[in-house]
Image 1: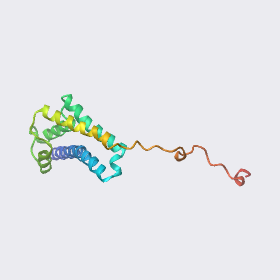
Image 2: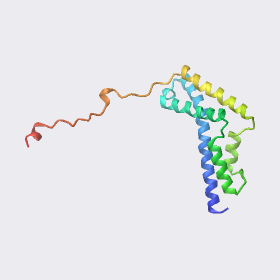
Image 3: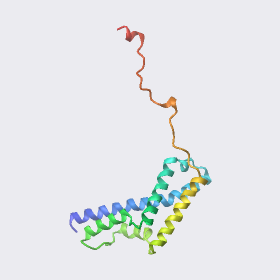
Image 4: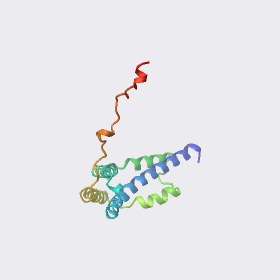
Length: 157
């Protein structure tokens, strides 16, 4: 394997790890929200965490309903194709095990149904485990644009 092929394999593995991390965030995020509600973990009510979580699964649902293939899957496949000169899946250790966890054989409609049900569960968590609103600065916390008044000794100079 030449150095450019090795680079494509490394890049494909990086994309796969990013994709896997995204999937874990979506799956474990919902579990953490419900477990956190049970144990009263404050961070599971963080507005920005909750917003990013619902947006993440929302993107998956939109892609699936729209009939799109995930761009991360497409990018990884293109990098692997470039690395091997035409063979899309020449398994690396990382690719083999992460793919076994992430990808299943089922119809597109089955996956769409699963994504929509999961998205509904994430939305339901907004009503059951209400997030706190985004933090707002109090007027006393805002930095002042005015310069500090000079002392009398500085003004007389």
